[in-house]
Picture 1 (tube, helix red, strand yellow):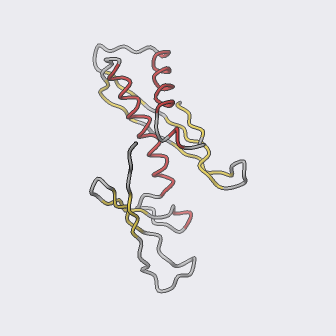
Picture 2 (cartoon, rainbow, N blue to C red):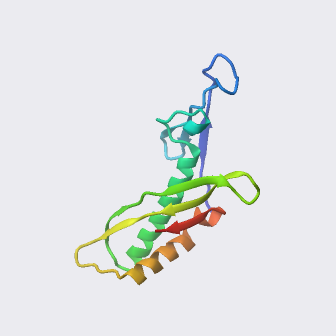
Picture 3 (cartoon, rainbow, N blue to C red):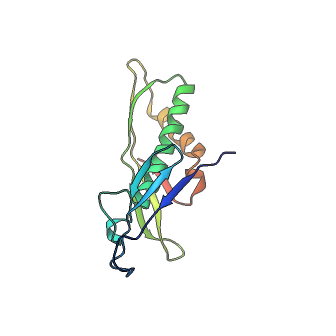
Length: 147
């Protein structure tokens, strides 16, 4: 078992606390010792130059999948040189008629070291295993696919 801590710090900077006026900007202080500037998504009156919770959620799924994939590759002695993913989350109404990130599509592009050859079937199995063992994917109802 392990614990993971994030401290959220928000202070009102607006003159009033009206819905259309109050600030959404806040700080996420991570246990690792640094701060992340965050806000609501721009569609919800947030600052577009700050990370929003929906982006953080999609990023956490992508990051967890990547780290699990890298562990699998390392154990198989398949050296990875580069891993790039452009993950896309879709927010829509779920089966309870509530807004949720219902789907996340991962699009990893992996470069293996020179001389390392991985066929499509093996790569697919590695991604399937990474999905099954990703702690974050195991924690959510969101449909996650690898394209």
